[in-house]
Image 1: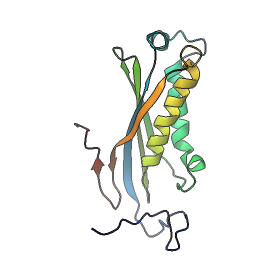
Image 2 (image 1 turned 120 degrees about the horizontal axis):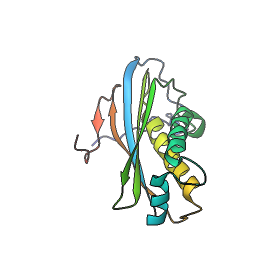
Image 3 (image 1 turned 90 degrees about the horizontal axis):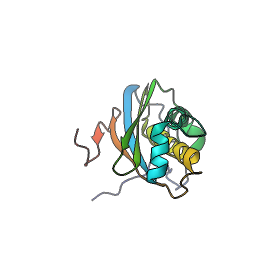
Length: 164
């Protein structure tokens, strides 16, 4: 088996931003998700919209979009991207008192948008935590992962556990 080469390191083993200048512009899409689990009391307040801080999910949606837009400022070797679309969805699980954040990011460019989707999910989840921590400091953020990517030189990829 040949050794995989990590693209963020040059031949001398030093970190660098990958040169994408020779790559073709293509449509690129990434979908990521993650979950926050909370107490029944916190979940009830979240879904009722009666949080003292306002519309938690509305603010988390805006935060997630901002996170996607600012990924290159947070992740040192990410290229700044012109995103053409960011969509944030929430799936509420009453039985488990959890919220799943699903982020879809799109661009037409030379590099993928996986990090933007993952950052959007993380930022959305952290915003929910921030807004609900007065009720439940023991919330757990978990299972942040890429579900799917489309486009680019490496082609399409779907997480093995994704059914669609």
